[in-house]
Length: 344
Image (cartoon, rainbow, N blue to C red; front, side, top):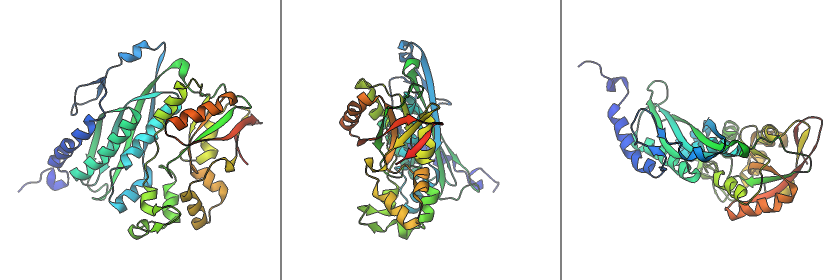
């Protein structure tokens, strides 16, 4: 018998089956602007509504889930990492003042197990629903010999839109503005190479229950990244102008907060102004990590930081609480020689 594609490790039939299994999930993400169905060579999305904007600007974000996937492999739980993938992209779009329109995902695997691929995509769809983005396309690449059979990588990108006048750029931030922090759901999707080292991650260790976490280590670490699209929309709808916005991802407070600041402005953050999540306290203690490293690697319980006029701080926090988010006044902006962050 001669060689064929299947004998080389690529199962086309499994690919067809995974598409069939994911169709029901994808349907839930549809928006009226989506043209055509799943299976075309490209995803089509009508921009008819965008024409109503004065100066529409497209915004985009791309990211992956990183080594958090190793936790999913060990736990054999694949239906939440898709939420992380969407979150990492749409939060960046929302951060700039945009509303996500659509999302595309890319899954590369050593072997296509249709049920596993469908589980991953179900999480992607859940993330799309949470952010009002349509999943209009994607790719599952079976790459034997490149990835181990039971492993995969997951990445994606989002496209959103904003009217130019509503873009959040940080240019109008001045000394005396309030910094409002929106709570994270946990470690989100950054710093997992360090997390895995601290906990010496294994199947056994992930099953361990920690009273201070109120859950097993695995369930705590796999908690999906929070999606802030609707929360930021609620702030805008409350009539608040968001002057600056930072998505706290890899690089923690020290790297991300300055990204929204103009030159000569320092963000002064009060560490005792909000509750640091138990997972971070446990990790710092167990890994004997310096405080600066913690704030330079992790979100420490704050997933998004907004800069607003001090007169709007209470209104901002109230709008976020009405949207179901925990939010805190975590600091203020002050003058400085250079832009940066000061923790006190």
